[in-house]
Length: 113
Image (cartoon, rainbow, N blue to C red; front, side, top):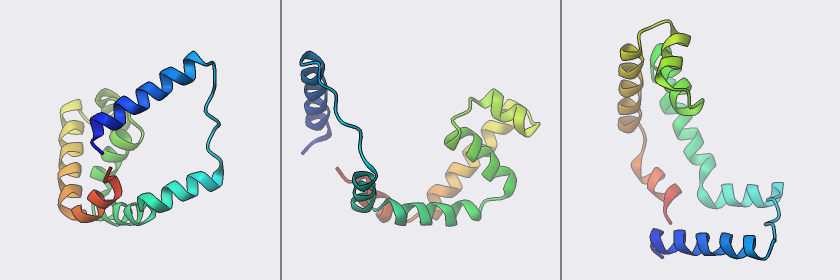
């Protein structure tokens, strides 16, 4: 099923739930564990952790702050005590290195629709 069709179906479902004044029950721990298992997230996490460990501490910190913590570049720069341009360069270098280190087949399997 295409992503557009899935997105439309999800949007229609959310509208129907809202119209009927229903709430989707929150996912319990068992459901979340099953989703994680089916998505292969544990293998992806291990591979990502191994790839991150290969980055220098300075680059790894920049990637962590920008991507994981979702901080804007000015905040990344401030926390690292560097210029915003240097922070952007570190994050860019880190992401490029991760792209080269990660097994793309694992990623494609994990995010396959």
